[in-house]
Image 1: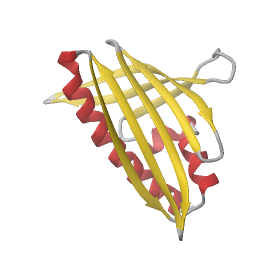
Image 2: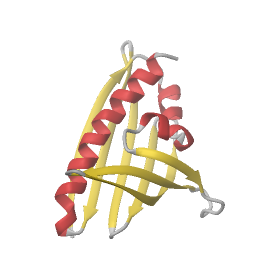
Image 3: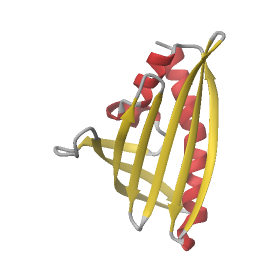
Length: 146
């Protein structure tokens, strides 16, 4: 198993409440996340957890394939969102998002930690970095158009 962490940040002309609301609403992520094609809310989840099953469309060279995985929203506060995703084979992604008010808007800052099997790690880490950069840009565009 390998583990890596990366951070992404973007300025958005909005307020903290609006941005946290968009980040924490997985039912809308198929519209803003570049890999997600389907989001299904789980019927059951542990107390205090919002659980979803998400389908991503991925590409590896000339091959396109779908993966379905579990994603949990563990905590949402006034300015943070903490999530974890569990994918096969043995891949775990933790996301800690913080939204901070600054002059003229907010900074949305993500810290992503990914654990994956050695042979899969480089691909998964690269896909996560690219997807999250585009995700932040799409959140910015979506929120600023409200």
